[in-house]
Figure 1 (cartoon, rainbow, N blue to C red):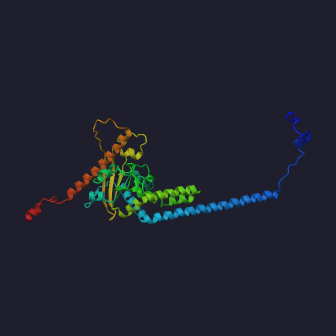
Figure 2: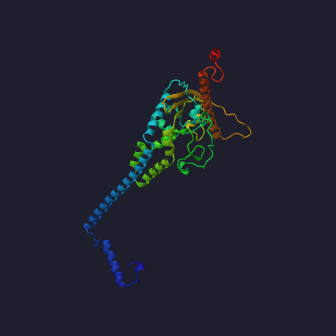
Figure 3: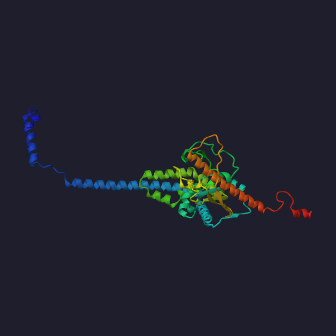
Length: 363
């Protein structure tokens, strides 16, 4: 006996305990086994339950996917096939402008004031992206307003900085978008091309493939929230864009000369770096109703920001952002000047109200 067992309890119990331990050590005790039939039925039950639960979860998941597809069809009805047809037209025109040897066309009927009043669509992307369909879609999906629109489409009332502060569209009300100024509001003119592309994204095959590939309800819910957010914000503007837009304006940034390319700063994209450097841009304007191109020019984006003094040197990122806007505004100003010169050259003598020589001789 172990020292701890001595003198504890009845002696008969202690002897029986010691005998059992010896039998276990010597292998003289057999453990009672469960009947094989029990384990077979237990295994079959687990398999049947697992299969049934798997089929049930697949049915629930399929039902949720069908609900999301029904919401997608509602968005499709609102935008219709006209959205995809408009997208194809815009991309075709951008490709034509990118492939032109020396764009130089100013239609006699072009009036920039009419284009500014719109409604219209604006897109800006790099020349290399404009020659690649895949890169073009990605660039147009993030196209925004810039200094070019501010200087070419002048005369719009209202302060773009007024509104509820925001960081993303989900913080805005129905039909409102979080603008580049960080405030909620209805999309301003011209419409950004990314509004159309963001709406068509949830109607395209890739979005449907992601929904079909979802393996659990959490993934389906995330895709559904994405669809609902787009329907709440971009869909309203996209439907107006498709139905009411009259003009399309595109700006293509040509690569800058290596000597003119400024040094990159932290957090600056390749597109922003190019727009902050001296380079040429291609400007195109099309009439969506007639399908005719009214403007095709190649102008230089090389502005110079004149400081007012007295406020010190701004941070590098602020100074670079200002330079991008100045360059874009410089290109827009040159485009306006060339359109004005073309209209002046096309006007007959005496058009400004003074009688022409022919009219004076007839009197």
